[in-house]
Image (cartoon, rainbow, N blue to C red):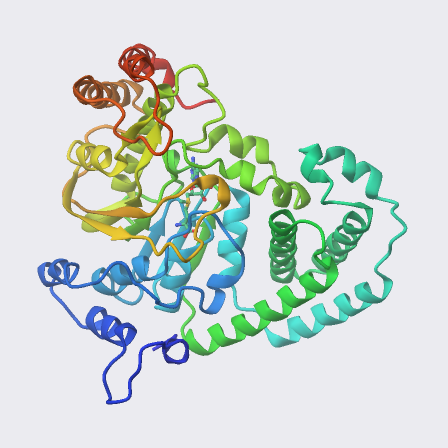
Length: 474
Ligand SMILES: C[S@@+](CC[C@H](N)C(=O)[O-])C[C@H]1O[C@@H](n2cnc3c(N)ncnc32)[C@H](O)[C@@H]1O
């Protein structure tokens, strides 16, 4: 069993009298053979808080990523609801947690994300690289280290194109020059035909830039980059010992609302979509993407849950989000084989002091598009662990919505009239709730009563503009 050494190694609970650790007990529970209905009841026996469990083993640690979920969530469903050789999909794969767990457990997988950085990281985490390749890379990097040029020749042009001037101060001349030297070395690696190493190097570079943005000046760029590469090499080597028959992994840089995945081809979906009004992923990744030559404006335009628009009426973000998620769920229904399981993990959000319980909206949608909601599991997020970046705000619990595909949806995800109809019903129900009680999500400062009452009018206005707000931007 992979990770066993890791699990014992990380064990904080004594096993003096031969008692099993919580991690061993958990693995024992989910690794048995069950019928479908037994597997469903095992879900009630799992302690979903996974307190003190190791979550950063093997390649999971390659790159920080905001709002990732812990590996034990996809692992549980992979173990309980798939067999070796089956195919698992995550349409919002982020940094690839579901994909890595599928890989480690000999399941084929498809990871889709609109953020090209997300699919790059997911690919690198599941691509084993030969030791001879690493020896070649080391030679290239030692040459680079010797000649790390600081003549600032590329600095001016770079500095001009950095997005936010305040943060650009972190990127002083020395740092820019070093980052550029690393980038050029990686380009040589690509030109010399070592594509997997090029991707691995870009992931290490991106992770280095992330550390710079998070920690500011004082990071020794080239040392940090070289350390990252070294640690990635070690972790891939450890992974190679665990994965005997390498399963297929496909990463797609695409839109969850129009999946480039074959109909009825998937055996399990485990995913965590973006939240409404919680985090602009493009903002979090602007610098990394810029350095890697990725188009963050395109991503910004199509990312679900972004909130840099509809400033005058934030409830329009909710109808847009519900439309986007309904389309995505219809696509999940299309690609999933009948009777198989689809799992969506999502927390609550807040809009204008009103609580948005996304999982309830999703469960309600499910019944309209060929899914049967089976159960909703509530779990606490370990607050001592940093899953999210500062701008996500505090998210201390989340819901795991488990659904089964019982039939094909009668309409397709591009049917604007259907989307508009369902979102209008959902927004109207939401408006009825808000008429009864406002301010269900007040944290901290109290707004005035007038301000809260305005939410009722705002939601009515947002309902008027649903047909235009749910359209996919072109
Ligand atoms: C909560 S994160 C997923 C994190 C993932 N579970 C992990 O462990 O890393 C949501 C993801 O949705 C992606 N996303 C946003 N809009 C999208 C779209 N239209 N199509 C596909 N992915 C999208 C974001 O880039 C982000 O990676």
